Length: 238
Image (cartoon, rainbow, N blue to C red; front, side, top):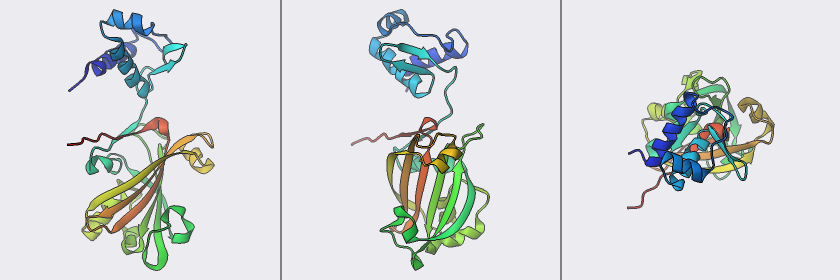
């Protein structure tokens, strides 16, 4: 169900897209504008927050609220209400592969504490790009234990996800995902790929995927342009 502030955000966005309100315009003070629109000040603030999240408005203390774009910025939104939503990145975007290689456990910091046969892993590197954009919003390194490394011979130039390939080839299903999100300074090599400045803020998500028997399927290290990716968690306690 659409809430009042979401309806208001949609109305304001329509006015911006039809140029009734223009990029560069400063919106009236909150109390005044809320009265003009016939809503509470808290509803207006929530609508502003929604449009700010979409990259349409910019709010600054003592400087007011300014329209900075006439349409929402391209952004991938990943909701984590459940396992299906958590894996949506591999369902709704494609991973363009840039290379594979075999690496020892000792070479990769995030593999420490995990076990792979012969102490080697299949590393698969790639990027993800939003539709109608040329610059990737994500770089990904995926590490597959040696027991599943045979998928290397069946990989295409683009894959929705590596874990899906493993599920198909080995007749198993992802049953658990453990992940950690961390704000980082973007390394120069990744920054160049994502169109960011070296050391710019970036989001890194390290995830481990397991099958229903608790066997590790893959470890992924993904770095995101935070302006084009949003991670949303919605947990209900019964």
